[in-house]
Length: 561
Image (spheres, rainbow, N blue to C red):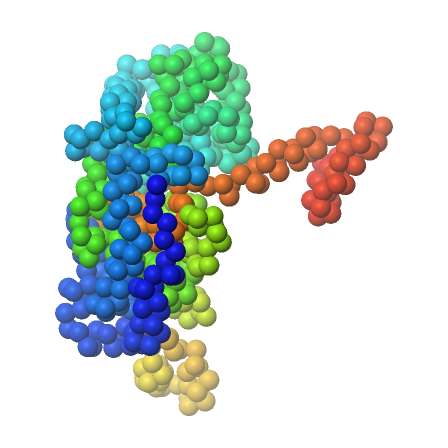
C-alpha cells in the first residue's frame, strides 16, 4: 500500500511557503549575478542528457526544502514499491510495472508471488520473430505481395504513445515502409487513411486490451469490411493482428491466436508503448531499434531507482514542477522541443501528465485542497515562436517552459541546426532577461524615431522577463535517448502524484462521457416522424437536459432536410 501523507500538513510544506513568499524574492537575473557558478551548481547529466535548471527561482535552501518534502511524503519508499511490483494502483488493485517491460537487469519481478519476466520475454520474442518475418518478406499478404504498409488502430495510450515514437524515430524507419495511425471514431480519420493504402500490402494492428473499446472496434470492423471488398474472408488472418487479452473476441474477428500479442493488467494504457502495444514501433523501425528504446528507458529507470534525491533527474524535475504549481501558483507549463522529430511529444505528455495526475481526490478519499496536474501544452520550435510565444513573453499568464533540443542533428544540414539551436538558447535567455524600459528606449532612439512615436511605442516594447525555464539538451535523438527522455517524464509524473497524495494510475474521469454517449447513441438513429415512432423517442430525449435534447433534435433536423 502506498504511503498516504497530506503534503500540506508536513513541516517542509509550510517552510516552503514562507521561503518562497519572504526569502526567495530575487529575480532570475539577480540570482545569476549573486552566484557565478549557478549553471554548474544547478544542472545534472545522465545517459547523454543534460538538464539545466539554473533558470528557475531556486537556491540551495529551496532544493533542500523540496527534497525534504519528498522525504516527508515517503517518496523513496514509494519508488521502491513501484519497482518491486506492489499494487500501488490501489483503486484498481493492480501493480504498476511498465518498468518491468524494459527490465534488462536479469533480476526477477514479482506480482502476487509470481515472476512476470518470463511472460514479458516470451511476448518480446514473439514480436521479434513477427517483425523479422515481416521485414524479410516471409510474411506476405493474401496475393503474395510483400507487406509495405501498416495501419495501427487504437485510441489513447494504444495510439498516442506508439505514434509519437514512430514520428520521433522516422529517421530509423525500415526503407519503403509506411505507417498510419487511426484513433478517432470520426469516420473521416479511417476513410482518408484507407484512400492511401493498398489492401494487398497493408497490415492492420488492432490494439485494444479488452477488444471491446468502442472507438477502436468500430474502426477495426469498418477496416475489415473495407478489406473484404478486395479479398476473401480467409485473408483476414494474413492482414490483421491483435494486441489484446481477449482471445475469444480476437478469434471471432478472424484473427488467429498466433497473431495475438498479449499484455497485462500491470501495464497502464498511457505507459504501454513499451509492451506489445509498441508492435507498430517494432514494425516501423525494426525490433533492434525497439529494443534500444527499451534499453534507454531502462537506463533512466536505473538512475531513478538508485540515485540520491539531490542528483536524481526525474525527482529534481518533478520537484521544480511542484514548486511552480503549488508555491508560485502557476497552473500551466509549456513543453517546447526544438526538434521536428518530437512534434507529437507535447501531445503525448498532455495525456501522460493530465490523465495521470488530473485528480481532485486524494489517497484517503478526501478532496485534494491543492493544485494537481498543471495544464501541459506546446509545439515544436521555431513554429511556436511565431504563434503563442507572444503570450509567454508579454501575456498576463506566467508560463514555466521546458525547452528540449539535440546537440547533433539527424539531417545533414548543419547550418539549419545552428539557426535552430541559436533560437533554442535565445528564447530561454529572453524569458529570463526580458527587456527593461531603458533598453527599449535605447533601441527606439537608435531608430531615430520622433519623440512622440517613441513615447507611444515604449510601453509595448518592454518585456517583464523573470520567466522560469528548464533546458534539456541531448546528444542526438537515438532510440536509446528517446527511451530515456520518455522515462524521465514518466517518473516525473509518478513523483508528483506521490507528493500530491493522489493515485496516478487510474483514469475514471474518461468514463462518464462514454457512459452517457451509450445512452444517447440509440436516439440519434430514430426517426423524428411521429408516424414512425418518433413521439416516443421525443419523450426520451425530453428527459435529458434542454441543451442536449435540443442538439439531438437539431442533429435529426439537419440530417432529414
